Length: 293
Length: 143
Image (cartoon, rainbow over all chains, first blue to last red; front, top):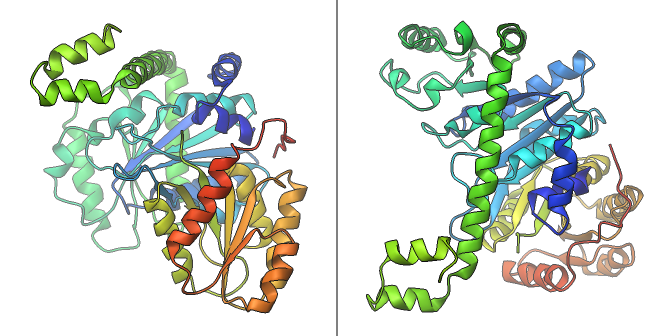
């Protein structure tokens, strides 16, 4: 399975056949995504969520994404640091992924990776996005349940009114609840959410104070995640979300093929044409994407 | 080509990971994808992580003097997991006279204090760029 993940995430020879085969088994897991700014405690919370799922006897897989350097192509994948206490548990599988140039806090092959884990029988798959901040909303079209992680001292009620990640959370985990000011942070979130229109068959996003450090509030957070999953099934919204995910998966494959094929055709000659003003980016870009340059 | 994935791990009980962090950063800046698992890892944890992350190489850092015990133990456990073709290298406070013994036990390179990080990058490039990633025929261990 570890090798299959590598083949699909690195698009090695044979990845298309593998992805086709694994797609047949897709859609069986409950996928949970965590987003939030760097240092808000996503990985540490996942450590707690994994422990809670294991205590119930469930197997868990984690896909954790960290940023690729735009300058060197390298990456430091550090999410395991927080989750390593489960390294020897055969019921827990974790793979670290780099963004490899994709914006939005995820990796372009994330769906293929999820399908591998589903085929291997993991019923709960946790996806950790890059901690990019306000605008990492792609995860909402990848997973069933979105947990937005924040912490006290991360801004006032006007931050909580902004568009972006505030719009996609099904559950808002206010981490570091061992710090003072957590009640204020929870109240501000609740206040801002109370002004938001209801979505998804009437689900009211939950706000859960939690401490990954002490474990305080973890059962409540788990209960909120389960409640959202139950709501998706009871309201029929799950089917709608799944259709959004499929649309997104298709869009990713199309975008990836088009850009990769077009980028493969770019040569120094094209840059010469731009530098010498014998062509322009709009014309050249149009020709390259339609295969005529 | 996608970047090579490297696991940097600290087996044993010493808590000094400045060296490991320097290597993590140098490899990241050289274009590798580097996974670091923190201090005080058992050889079992390192082998399990190498399997799950499907890395091309594992770098071990140790300052306590237990390298002759722990490095070969990691190599042996990795072989048991079907990871015999994964490159293992090491560093830390390792006396010159121990290097030959470690190499005999499957540690392909040993880099002590003062080694320019470029040397380690060159070592990895020479070993990993030449041979493509291990073939899928390798035993597909499932956990």
